[in-house]
Image 1 (spheres, rainbow, N blue to C red):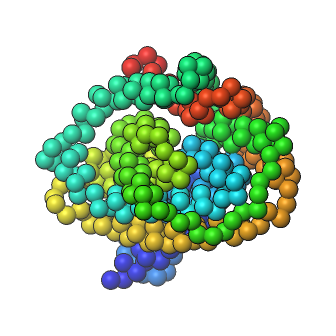
Image 2 (cartoon, rainbow, N blue to C red; image 1 turned 120 degrees about the horizontal axis):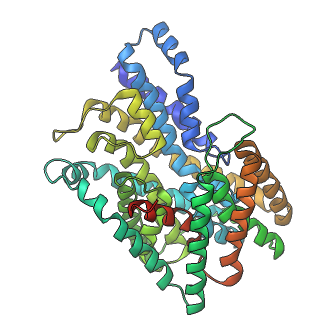
Image 3 (tube, rainbow, N blue to C red; image 1 turned 90 degrees about the vertical axis):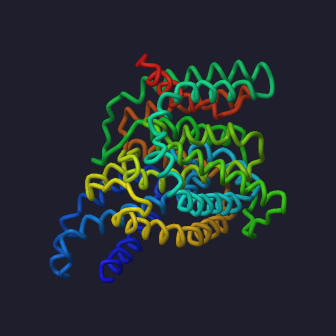
Length: 433
């Protein structure tokens, strides 16, 4: 029982860290996990003082990291909505969330995102045993999925283009897909020169430019102002509740898919989910995308034990800490059962606290001019990119923003900017790059 108590305490600590750190744009959970790992010596010293069995220390550190991981999938919608500085995991969620913000319903976007994340967490946990049976013994379908990946990506790109409203929009969509794809092939290989010595990736300035920064510039040019934010709880009709279930299922299955196939990110998973979800409104889009984010996080941890593969930075760290046993029987191995504790704790606490933080920030949104907030956000993103990515990051940001403005002003869906990931990944699976 004493080890469960320590797992519980470390899970609570990880939850608080994940919740707070994810509110800071640019602080990706992978960076947070590396920071936690870097102070593991302190935890070893603490374990000796408390008389904790040394074998439990890696599991406790893993519990803290996993809890922070899950918490971040809930709360990272907040800076994306109110500041326009998205991570890869919520880049596409920014678009409908920002739309609701302009209508005075930013808090509603936060709550809907939390609903999607919570629902997908429950569904993913309930599907872990079936996932094990499908991917490992007895069906062993894992290898078959990899061979289908190029065709899935081609189908996703085709559907993205062909579902545009007009032929002109289709042409623009193709142009932006190609342009952002070439952009991705160049910038994702660039070395950064950050002012702060933290692990960083060109994806942060690239996606911030394509989505967040371009949105801010567009709003600034058009002199957009937002209404005072309503802080009433969103109500869903019966048909919306049924539609939300479909959105959650679609997003969850896509998130699980992300956790299985190598090279597929949550950003690509969101596009796949939206393609299969079909046309829908802003509410259901947010629920779908948030479901992808959280289900991918949970399934990634589970797949360390099912297919013995690490599909995220957090999973790599946990894999190195505890060396997971293969899940070969009906019941999961002991270490996975212990890692389910922080997942359940973080999920349970993240839902109400994300909504509370969203409400608190929304109440303060109407007290200042949105144009002033845009200026502050633009400066803030520039400083963040400079700190985490250096002057090269600033160039990446500005070029990305230029591409991101094209679909805004020319009348195409901005999801075509995800060519930054789709095109390089497709070429990789085809063996061209």
